[in-house]
Amino acid sequence: GTRPAGRTLAERVPASRRPQRTATTRRFLMCRPTHFDVTYAINPWMRPEEGADRARALRQWAALRDLYRRLGHTVEEIPPDPRLPDMVFAANGATVIDGRVLGARFRHPERAAEGPAYLSWFADHGYATTRAPRFINEGEGDYLLAGRTILAGTGFRTEPRAHEEAEEFFGLPVVTLTLVDPAYYHLDTALSVLSDTEIMYYPGAFSEGSRAVLEMLFPGAILAEPEDAAAFGLNALSDGRHVLLPSAAGRLARAVAARGFEPIGVDLSELLKAGGSVKCCTLELRPS
Ligand code: ARG
Image 1 (cartoon, rainbow, N blue to C red):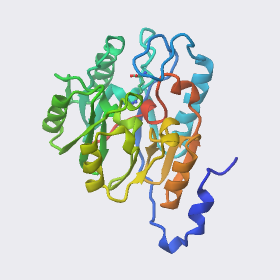
Image 2 (image 1 turned 90 degrees about the vertical axis):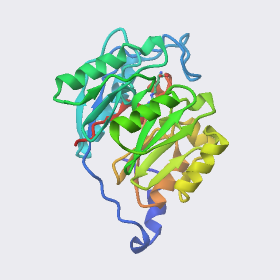
Image 3 (image 1 turned 135 degrees about the horizontal axis):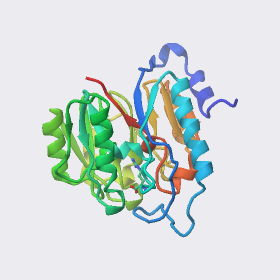
């Protein structure tokens, strides 16, 4: 096949000056888009009058799942529920760190039943420590782990007091980041963790104060242009070496390649009609 854009740029940098990138094997939970559709609008990307092509969504989703497996990762599947057209966005179903599961509590009634559906999957699959949350939080949509710090979004979905609940439950520091652009309603649409210490993000999605916090914590971060953000280029998944991101985000692909990662373009254009892409479809199961 074709090489990901930007690969050659990285190769022009002498190998000795490129950081060594090592993938670590991950375990993911995904939900097949058997019942995927756009039937309501809870973010600006959704056009219920246009709907979605489910067969195409299924093919694109299966290609992502198969790619994860080819890269050596484990993918588990939670059964889809016919009443929940957005359930394919597994990232929102929970947050799992050190084998501890913090359930999700959705902002919109259309997705409310996903919270208990994901929690009961965990209870049935040997996860002893699960918590039904008190406050609204949309799982890894708004909670991203960078090293041992939780970067936590708020502004549209997850409420600030949920951040305290997460800090207490996981015993990890939480950095609250405020989102201000409705097109980037979840943290994982505006920021992506590349390694324990490196991120990329779209500054325009954050409040002024949160931009200052990000500059302080991650001075060397990759900053996305509006075009790459709009292509959902930040809804990426890094395993420490490979960075899976929407193929349309060419500049971001070149930027991660220049830092020694291997970008892999993925086409999830059908799922983008609901406002989701690579990361949204992927819930990471971090063991204890
Ligand atoms: N239609 C879904 C919603 O608005 C998309 C969720 C995307 N997931 C994500 N992790 N950003 O809730």
